[in-house]
Image (cartoon, one colour):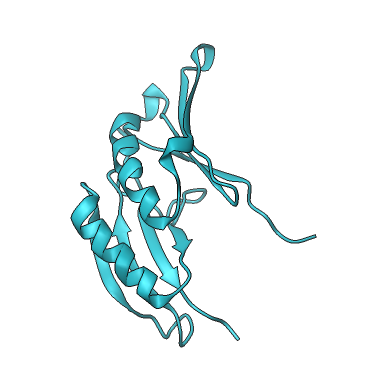
Length: 144
């Protein structure tokens, strides 16, 4: 059996704001936002936006009311540290960076594209934060 992650669900502070961001960002890394669906479970005060793709589905979920004022910390146990999207080549990292800079409102660039030899010699990536402060990465590398 080969490892396979079916979906990742991320609780965001503001679902509408996050949806606007991810509608712009996810096509940059290969998602077709026309396949997006919304789901609601009123008895659990649960809303989600699901971005379906064949290899991976990304879900954004509303927070519970009692957590609306909580601060995001990617170093808190159980928290999402960051989410990396792999692209097919170094040039695709550069193109994704250009698209994020010009087409993705609310993106905060942390590190522009560069090699990160501390990960491996071919590790080339840029890092950004989404509208909710969640760290994202666009990366390409070849490990021997």
